[in-house]
Amino acid sequence: MSTHTARTALACVATICLAGSAQAQTEEIVRTISMDAGGLFELSNMIGDITVTGAEGTDLTIRATKRVSDRGSAQDADAALRRVEVEITQRGNRVEVETEYERSPGNGPSVSVDYEVGVPSGVRVTVEAVATDVTIDGVDGETRVEVVSGAVQLTTLSRLVEAKAVSGHIRLSGVASDDALSVESVAGNLTLDGVRAPRLEASSVSGTISLSGVEARRVEIGTVAGAVTYQGALAADGRYEFESHSGAIRLTVPGSTGFELEAESFSGAFNSDVPITVGGGTRNTTVFDRGLHTLEGTVGDGGARLEIATFSGDITIESR
Image 1: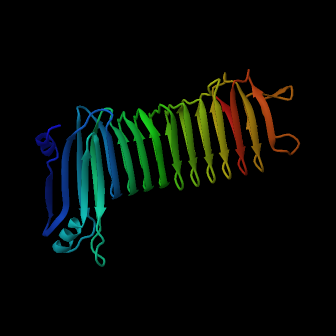
Image 2: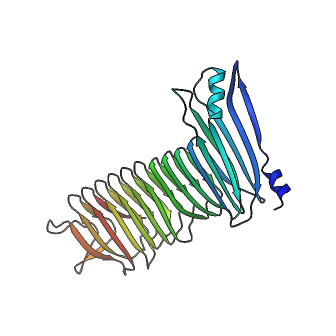
Image 3: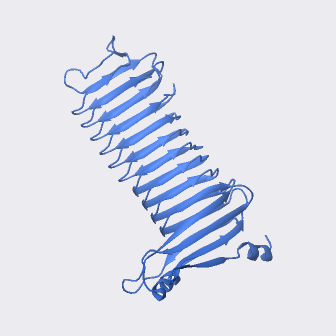
């Protein structure tokens, strides 16, 4: 890319919007940068929503909107906007965007920055944020998302690697991964629908985990204080592990699925409407034997390996 082209592509448009008699309540920054497939886009934000969508062509488009959330004097609002900088840096086929906050004197107005980004095909995306809701749709490059406080919604992604939140719900729909996919939340629910990956790991400390339409040969699901539900197939050569400390685990699998089962609970019950062969006998409704709260058996001709463990939650296996 020539110096002239780079300068043209990095041209910045700033707009000051008036609100009644108050001045400078918002400021908008727009940039367009040419990127090739295989490039990397990194976005770091403190406060404000982030929306990233896949786009046609080779242009990365960035629209950042600063917003003063507190109604004050025009002078205070203008000063608050100036204390927040959107730093956009291009190094070859890599673009970094950082939201920089200067320390504000006293109790001045607070400022958030919302981002709307269009990403060309094949560009990798990394988003890191603090108090932010993140929405990403239609991106086919490798994608990583990590937030401290905020909801994460990811749809129609071809190469999702990880999605993490400390305090926030995570929802995935129609996403895939070439390798391992990791989904984690400390205080939030996980909802995964139509996820395809060779290996899937999902965990939450105080949230429920709901999975449907999952296609994976290796699945590891765990939560401390939450229920787990799973609806989907079990690959014949797959291994599936589900664990909850104080929540129920309910699995719904195709009636023709065969698997080896190991189930264990300290104080929970076990029930299955799938015929399970235990010690040479077959039962439709199976309970833990002899108060040991462990059970090992086989469904059909075996195949997949299914391990389920709870401390104080019930275990249920249903067929569909």
